[in-house]
Image (cartoon, rainbow, N blue to C red; front, side, top):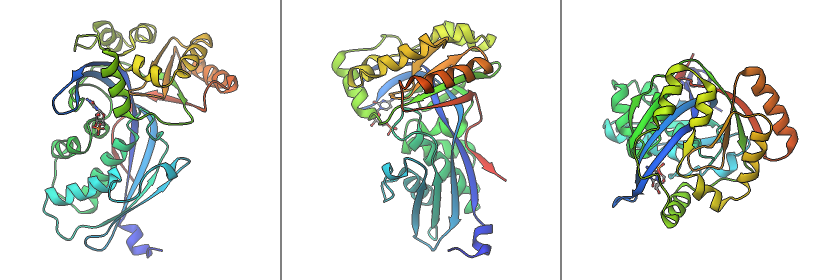
Length: 307
Ligand code: C5P
């Protein structure tokens, strides 16, 4: 067990998961990625990352949470990779860190859970090691780890282009009330994009829908509910036809819109207000259509230091 002095030096960071309000995808590129136009919204479902001092060259991670056993804790853990990358980029030869991650964002759930942990590790280590580094530099390092990492650092509501990692903020008024329906198992993002290629899906346009941007500017949940759109839905549903019933159930129970988040399998249902979201989450939970339900709001900030 660490001494109190060492515990005092540890740094804690909180990072939100994301949903994609819209996701337009082009075909596979030569680098294996797909060009996207996606509007991300960070929602109030958080992972917590604690970074404690360690011997030079020592990089460890301990995972907590219901799905902790589904995350690798070796060198391929995304948070460890983030810490090592940061140390290398800033030539910090004596760097080491013991990371503890408390996961609430579903693993391979389409909510950028792994990317959130990488973003949290970048921020926490930059503070732990007292680095002189700008948010933009952290974002550049983040993009090397995963396409969603820059958004997990930034949070809020943003349009992501290229691989989803080139961000511009999107004007969004008010707060939206979502009910998330979790699945009992994850979906592999590369497998969903592979199915997308096989089916030849895609809108053929890489512009975010105007009606969605207008809905966000006016803070109109009903208009937003109608504008939600995801080019990966068909591929995700082909791999997981059971998600069709989840979507139907949520809409029957009063959601004003639904969307598979990213590559799925998490489904986000929009409610018109907080009390409708409470009713929807209770009814959806009782329906047995999904593995778990969580009420969240968005947008919320990205990676932030905790006191
Ligand atoms: O960037 P990240 O490692 O999170 O992406 C995981 C996988 O998702 C990629 O290896 C790729 O197969 C797929 N992907 C894609 N196009 C994107 C983002 C992700 O094809 N824009």
